[in-house]
Image 1 (spheres, protein in one colour):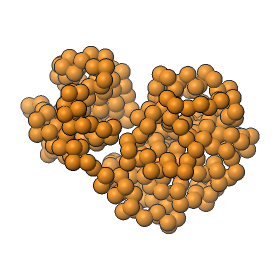
Image 2: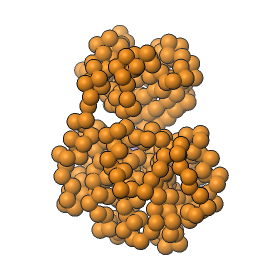
Image 3: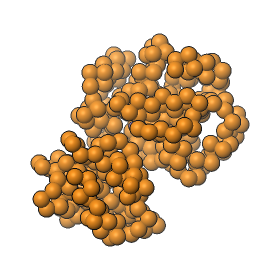
Image 4: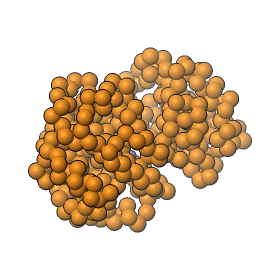
Length: 326
Ligand SMILES: [Mn+2]
C-alpha cells in the first residue's frame, strides 16, 4: 500500500480532493487535512464537494481552494490524481457529481472507513474499524512517515473529523489510537475547546425550538421494544425556519433514553421524498436494514437511507419491518 501510495503521489502535481454529498465534519475535516498536506509537500490541490456543508463547518474551508459541484468551472483534464475521502461508492457524491468519474482519466486513491467499498479506485485504503476518515488519513501519513507535514490547519481539521464522527469521542469505535492521534494534533497547536465551540455552540434559537418540538411532539417510542422514531415534514421544518444542519444528530437523542437501542430519523425533502438516518448500539445493527428497505447503508451502528415514498408511507414501512432489526 505504502509504495503504491508514494508512487501515485510522486507522479502527481494537480490533485483533486473529493468527498461525499451533504459533507459532514469528517468529510470536511479529512478533505481540508488532505488539501493542507498536499500543499505542504508542493502539490497543487483543489477540493471539490458535491454540495455545501452545514454553516458551522464553512469556516474550516476558509483559505482553501474549493468549490461545490453545483457551481464549479473546473477542467477535469488538468488533474493527475484524485482523492476519494470518507466514501466507498461513486454514487455517494450524488448523481450529478458522479459524472466527474467518467471525465477523470487519472488515478484515484480512496481513504475511507465505511464497510464494503466498491472497486472504483486504483488504490483503496479501507479500514472500517477506524472511527473516522480523519483519523485514518493521519494513520496513513504516519505509515508514509509524513505526518510531520501536518500544519496547524490540517491538525485542526483532523481533530474536527474525529470529534464529529465519534459523537465527541464516545462511540465504540474510539480507542487508544484515537486519543493518540488527538494528542499528536493537540501538540501541533490545536486548542480542543475552540473546535468544540466552533461546532456545537453555533445554535440558533429556531434550531433549538425545532429540536425541542421534534422531541416533545414527534418522537414515538415503539411499545415493548428498544426502537424509537422521529419524523419531520417539510412544513414543520419551515415552521422553524430550518437551515441545513439543524436536525444533525437529532437521531441520537433517542438513543440517550434509557432502554432505547435503535433510533430512526425521517425527514421529508423538497420533493416529498424522505431522507433517513439510522442509529443503534449494543447488539443491534442498522446498516443491513437500511440497505434492504431504504436504498441506503453505512456502518453497523450508523447508516443512512432514502425512501421514494412519502413521509407517512415511509413511517408505515418502518413500522411494518422494524422487527427485522431486533
Ligand atoms: Mn466518516
